[in-house]
Length: 50
Image 1: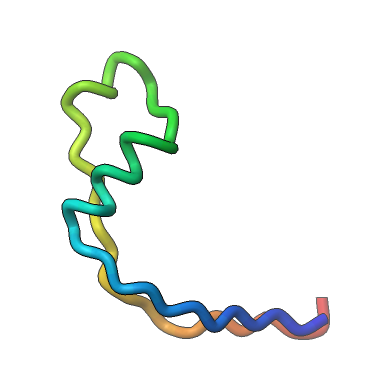
Image 2: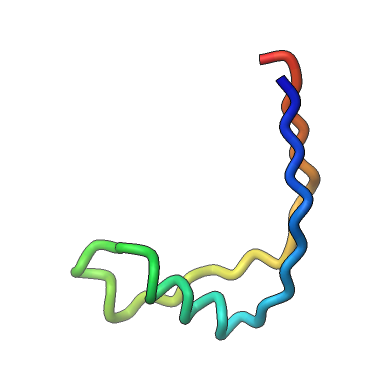
């Protein structure tokens, strides 16, 4: 099995926070004070032969 995802989307930290609030369910005790960590990038993932 080979997995390759090549999507690059540029969004601001504020856009990530807005999307997180709109589409991600967090514990209601945390919801109001949530400030999600924005990840700017990462290493390429490669999965083969599973």
